[in-house]
Image 1 (cartoon, rainbow, N blue to C red):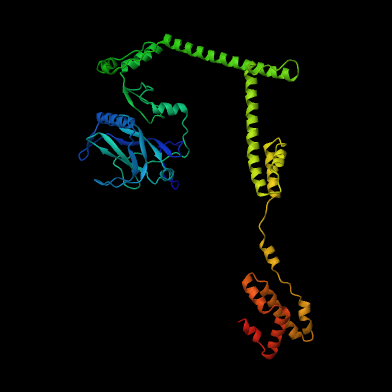
Image 2 (image 1 turned 180 degrees about the vertical axis):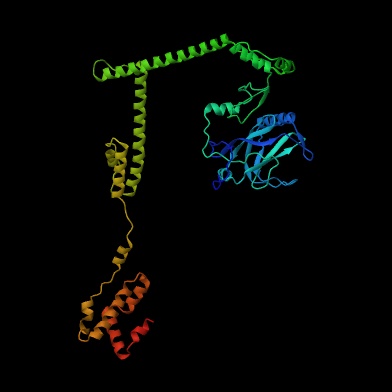
Length: 441
């Protein structure tokens, strides 16, 4: 439908790994080919490529995935995009999981920033060296673009186990000459050759004889050399099931014995608490032994907590001579809970705290009070002079009470009283109007 974006039938499953990185499952990355320039790669080569990949993986080596192709002959490092794992070959196409994808790059892949991919392949060594994720460069093989499903695929334990043991766990399909491993939704297949005769024999054992055509019988002889016998022994299987059930029964019996011991111990404790019988020694039941151990642990914890608070209380008493440590420790031990002991020590600490003198208190100690009524009394007759005298008196009070004590002390040494300062400046203002204002400019 137009205007809704691209549509692809194939969307790749993905999941987030326990380490926070991501895995994309079953990506087609390479396939058989025959080309004049590039040569050819057939089924036999494909089997050898998978063999070499698995051998290196056993030794701990995984081919890298990276952004864009490496330049020929270059040693430049491209941005890493994870590693290739679980390489499979279905006779035509190679599939692999892209693992350890960083979170930022995974979101770019999900946004279709790198829709194409192309392997770097060494034909002589039959090895896939790495996988390049391509942003716009067209790849040789036109696989479905790397379009991921919206929701994460959560693998259960069985799926994780079977997907890691594809060589050992096989499901067979009998629709043609070949049977495949089909553990991952039909997208990952490892070919195993089986003859039609062996498949038909399994069907005959289950459903009875089936008519065969001359053509089927003619095709059978040439394939018998590839048949691997698959046999089932019902008696052996029944014996294994019997041993398993016996083991389960033994474990259940043991658990029942332990449960009876615990229940009997609880009954003994109830009777002892009610005074019906004497308390049995600790060895009488598992429950009572556990109870004694629990009590002992609580006692150890109690003494440990008291020691911690006592050490803190000692430090407080050493800083405050008015507190007697022995008396305070005795009071501390009267509290039963650790929370109450902490509250007690906090209270002692706050009560004995010595706070530094506030700046306002320091200022108050050096504050010089000026009696304005006494200083301004002689200027009340003239309102203009009175107003000027008030201004001069305010400047005096601000100067002697400033934060710079050195400057304030020098000023007081020159003008010890406010009366002299005000009288002098009023007289100077009458002789030379504006002189006071000029003195401060």
